[in-house]
Every structure is written in C-alpha cells, then in structure tokens.
Image 1: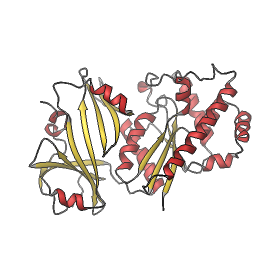
Image 2 (image 1 turned 90 degrees about the vertical axis):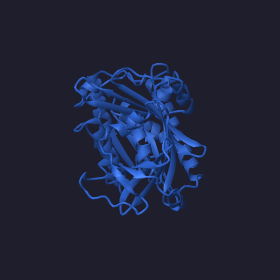
Image 3 (image 1 turned 45 degrees about the horizontal axis):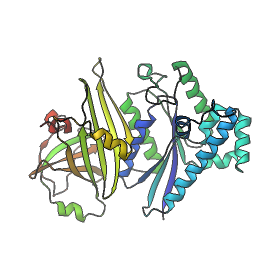
Image 4 (image 1 turned 120 degrees about the vertical axis):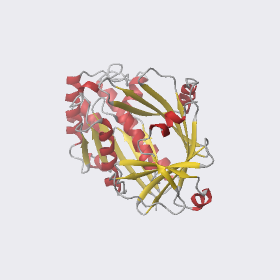
Length: 362
C-alpha cells in the first residue's frame, strides 16, 4: 500500500526553513522516502509581481494566494499517486493557515467558504505542522532578510509575526514548535527528530563516527535489496577567507537533486552552516565558479543498516584500495558492530586530513 504523508514546515521570518528543506531531503531520502516539496506560495506570487500592494485589496490578493496554495497541494498529491514508490513525503513550505496571519478571521473563513471547505477539512489535510521559531527570538545576531527578497520585517515585526503564525496553527492536533534553545545545527537535528517521531522512523543518531576501511566487496552491497545507492559529486567554489562554499549533486540514473552549502567562520570561532536546494540551471551556473585549485569529489554512496545501526559507505573515485564508512550513533563511546565484509583500517573521526575539502586540494 502506498503511504503519502503531507506535512507543513512553517515559522517566522529568518527561521531556517530553506536549510531545513535540505536536511529533510537528506535525512528521509536515504531512509526510503521520496520527498516532494511544495514551494512557498507567497514568495512565488510576490516575486512575480502579484502582491497585496499590487492587487485591488489585500483580500483580493489572499483569495488568489489561497487558491494557488490549495491547487499546488492538490497537484503534488495527484502526482505522488502516480509514483511507484511506497513511501512519499510531501513537504509544504507553509500551509493554508499561514495565510490567516495576514487577514482577519472573518476574511479567512470567507475564503474557506468560497472553496467549499470547512476549517476542520483544511486542518486535517496536513498530518503534522512544524514551526521553526524566528531567529529574532533568542538568536537576534543571526536575523536577516537578505536571503528572501519578499521579506522586509524588522526584528520587532518578526517576533510579532512569529507569535501570530503560532496562534494560527495552534489548534492543529500535531503542532510542534522548534525554538532557538540550541545552536542552529541542534535546531535542525531537533526538527528531524520531531518529523521522524511523527513518521515512526527510527532515527537515533546524534553524531557520526568515521572509519577508513579496506576496499569492500561491491557485489555484496549491490546484491542487498535494502541497500540504497546514490552518486554524490561535490564541487568547491571560489570563496573568501573564512568561507567554504560548495555545491552538491546527489542522485541516481537521470534523477538528481542539487544543493548549495556555505560555511562561514564567525569572529567568535563558531562555524555557521547554511544549505539550500538548487535547480539544475542554478547548479550549472554555479559550476562555472569552481575553484581551480580544488578537484571535484566524486563518490558512490551505499546506505544500509546492520544490527540497528545506520551506515554510509563511500567509494571514492580517488582510490581503488580503500574507502570510508560513517556510522550514525547516539553515543560516541557506544561499540559499533561492523558487517563481516567491512575491514576497518583505523578510525578517522575528527581527522582533518580526511575531510572532503582537504581531499579536494590538488
């Protein structure tokens, strides 16, 4: 039986939604899900010239936005039903109740009535809703609107809007708020954990350990129907001191997803990492900015489980006598049980010379 689940990722301005989408893609595709993303409708419309200040009234605009939101979600679900995979996760970048934050209750109810729906029907179309708290609450130093041309809120406005969005969604039976009580990576880990709990997916990892191993018997991996294989290519781009910018292509056959990852070392020494998904065209344009002093890192990644442990085994094009395997674990000292075909040479956890960025140096 096909399992199609639809969730919402929402939040205040500058909450980390773009990076969250990449985390969701990476975390759940390797666990057998096809992940589909419904883009944020307001950003699409406003960037295209359709906005509350260009339409006759704000209500006129909201009617258009809600209609497009519902139609997009309907089309994504219709498309999902045609796909052969059993587990499909539809992730909405904001949902219908986000629109309610920009109008009165009466206006929102009028729009729902026009669509021939009830509030309960709109609520129940989403399995779960995850709210990422704006950086303006507790992480003010990272608050910015530079990454979204449709956003103009001040810190005070961002806080107020965050509160309003929470109020709009608060009656959903599975509504979770991911706050700024940890650093940003911790925030993303907590989001993935919450989604995993909702889906019933075993996702125990908190850290990774890395090992150098002898070149494995690929035939064993290829014969395992539960082993998921993907091709990964990392390209490092020209960047300023203190920055590491790379693009990544990941997928199999003719289907690939593309990401831009940026690491910036702050004056405090903290590493701030952000990631967003790219289109194929955006990826090709960025490829032209590749750092000529660094080679592309190409590898085949085999993802599998063994004795309730999750492994990612990377076969690098650089080597024909060794490989690297990473194991996700909830405790750094917890013993790791390797399959017989994996022969460990030594542990590489924290070893700088085996980072991808170092291996890419010519």
